[in-house]
Image (cartoon, rainbow, N blue to C red):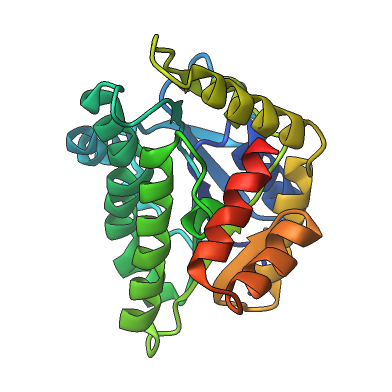
Length: 268
């Protein structure tokens, strides 16, 4: 698909990965709409047409969608990127926090997809759902994030199966460590419980790895390349180890070995 002349929607486009993707679309000649929970305070790039869309509350999505006039736009490309996270132990975290993450990362994204899918199918457009390698390699103390991204990847594959004869193309974009604002925005849930040191060690490892990881611009480049090459299905972005070697090796070894390696990755 050619990006020039297309109409693209990027959720969560005011910072990080979403901002990088929106910027790259603009540079390729696409008209870009970007969403945020609060467009008035968000820092959108010049040229982005901003819209309010809070996917953390599924009941509000329809109202926002119509109030912002998004229902009147025939998008050629939709990138579901908006999201957030909470770092904490499942057994001691407030379930409402856990449920809120699932609603934002999975249910809200599915709702937006439902709104745009008929038009995307008609226009033989592109759907890009930003998932994570956490769908394959769960991150300790981020159970809601892991579950949501695994569900999102399964959902994207289902969309591909159900629309394969329509001309629609869909990408399950599985990201590894990316040096974006995501980690800075994660809420840390601290509790006075046994083995708190393990949580601290895992969080320290996550921050250390992200500080050395790829920039959001690399993700934007990969997304544009995939769309221009008419790719569909899984697209992994991360270090060579994360995106290529680990998924390959883990398909060839017992699950218990893969789990041990995943634990070592975060705690060694």
